[in-house]
Length: 157
Length: 157
DNA sequence: ACACTGTTGTCAAATAAGTTGACAAAAATA
DNA sequence: TATTTTTGTCAACTTATTTGACAACAGTGT
Image (tube, rainbow over all chains, first blue to last red):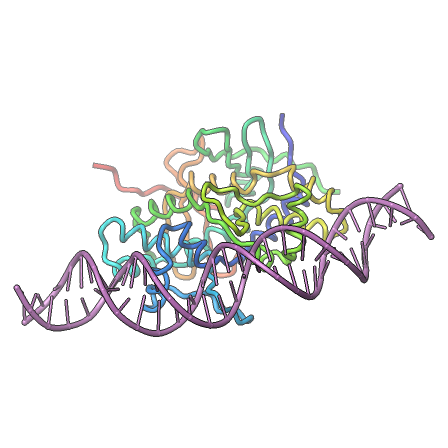
């Protein structure tokens, strides 16, 4: 069983992924990261993290996904022995990374095919490799493979 | 300026991405999607979406990222003329897609290099292409390119 | 040991956000 | 038109978050 997911659906998905600017409450951050609300407020006071300062004045703190990742990373370092300030420094060396990964997906997601027990993600052309597309092959629990395949897209009318 | 991000950082990031099971409140979903809280409760009553039913009994609804994507997609269809039930059906045909994309990244993220105005994401080897790694090249506002490059990783001792 | 700073838990009072149920108004459908 | 589906709004109630304070604990340096 092999079925290509229609381009309209993918277009909508890409649009949704590009926005993806949701916010979470402090309780949600605490639940997801294991860092207590008390700590989060303290880290904010120290300037290590910042809640989103949206236009609409809010009475409760709201955090972006970026901050969620930031908190997770800081906590990851702290749990393995780093001091808080060292953990923050290490974390902030590479902000923008998660943003870059999202841009990569949003830019390169070209097509999607459902197969028996997984997906094939069409990532489009690779430089200097004409007439082929790169596919990420996901099948059950196997590791994801990258494969170059002939691009049998029917000619546009 | 060209600097490879250390493997330790990437390892931590992959672990964080694999979990990534945060939950959002109904107000957060409403803000992010433009769908009113009233609608979300109604959609729930109709069985179109479900809040997370965690172990800890909660008094407030909490939604997964999956549901956020679901709501965004339903709203996308509704806004272009589909009936609610048709939008739901179209949306649910391809659940698991966002999960698959995340697994792809988590499986294949091999390395990261910061360059002048962007990143190079090392995605590892491509089947039948020995001694090369596939890189996603992100530079400023340019479209992300895929490139096969020699893999100059120093030999393991 | 002692003082000091940095960090975290907990409590209390106040405010904001979310819950349900109901009524009514639109909007879609028969 | 009549009927059902969908949505907004209100009210009374419950839960979550906010701030500020006090205390405890860990680490650092004297």
